[in-house]
Length: 352
Ligand code: NAD
Image 1 (cartoon, rainbow, N blue to C red):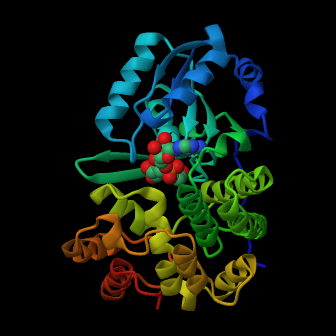
Image 2: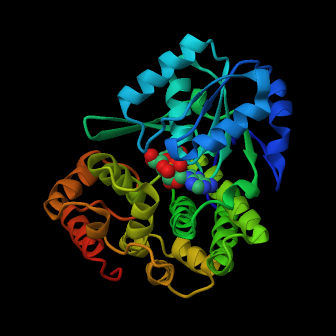
């Protein structure tokens, strides 16, 4: 076993079907009185419900979150939080809404109570992202880590199956890359394997019946584990590629992860055979990249970057950006190889 340092800093977690009922108790435990509720426009009704539950503990609703947190939107949300005198935020939604909360917390330090409704895992990390002029910048800051997370699987019942599948694969991507991260450890590896297993084994039941609450519980449990390891270790080629492409071309986040993951794992497989074996074991197969690519077809997800709207002539630029600032990765970052990876992903070919 390699030597390691593990210093977990994770939010308080309240997990279980129906746990939204504990919201006011949790806000009181944070010693907050004036919550600003955040959501996307599509989830404004859920934000309204949250504000109703909060009663006079809610000072307003900001239902404008969008993907990749544009800087101008973050500024607008910060001034709204100031104007209303908010002393905390309740972010109900996926990574976009929680990301907006993080952007507010980054400047004012307001605590976040997150209620995730996708499997993206942002609620368990101190990673934030801000997009300015098509460039997404990410960083880590302890101020943006939510104080409390309420995981209520009942809120997942409205997530359409295709988003369920792509978001589940997004969570699996966190766990998969953590298994070859230079700063992983035996505990994060256990969480990662269990997270991949919990999610991958629940997707078929949810494909049959998206209202299967047992499978929703298992998937959300898996995404908690996957988000936790994302917060604890460094990220490699897969996440770097997705950040670059997502920010530059405004590509849908979870589908982008789902398309790129098989190719990124194939690229790294020779440098991380043990990690690839653990991922395959958790998926219950021999070959993880092949299986993850097959799942795109099985669940009727986009299989190519072309389908997601990336322009073909952006491949060279993306390959160049991916090697520009070096970071730890189990295989050397070679521009020509990454360009080939992106070409395969662009065309929807099987991983190689
Ligand atoms: P999202 O938050 O953009 O949600 C996608 C759509 O699904 C939105 O319209 C949303 O309103 C809707 N939706 C969400 N939950 C729903 C539900 N239960 N029922 C019905 N509709 C629902 O998507 P995402 O993939 O969760 O998040 C993507 C963003 O999160 C990206 O910007 C990404 O960079 C960021 N992210 C950050 C981290 C981190 O650690 N900082 C981790 C993962 C993702």
